[in-house]
Image 1 (cartoon, rainbow, N blue to C red):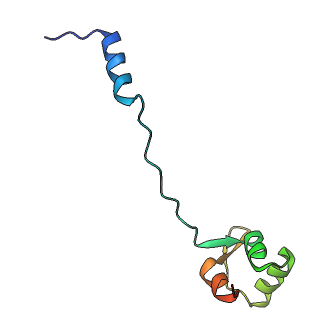
Image 2: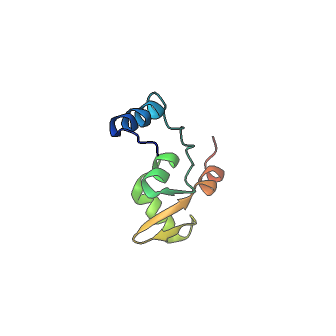
Image 3: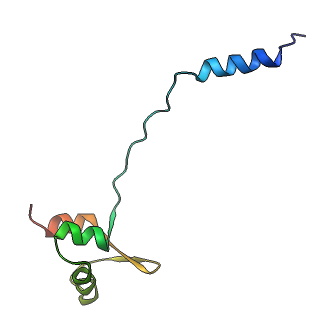
Length: 80
């Protein structure tokens, strides 16, 4: 049987990983904006966004206690 020294195993492993960087992950754009993000995007106050949500002017989803607004809707609403 081939006996491999523990130190040799450590150096073999360190040689294989040395100098290699993990691949960059693709950033995925979120589907929903927070109330603060929507307010900044629409250039209005956070309170106004909440009022518009309660009035039914903006579609939203609720995750727990926070409201999320679809980015697609925001991009269609705000002329650029």
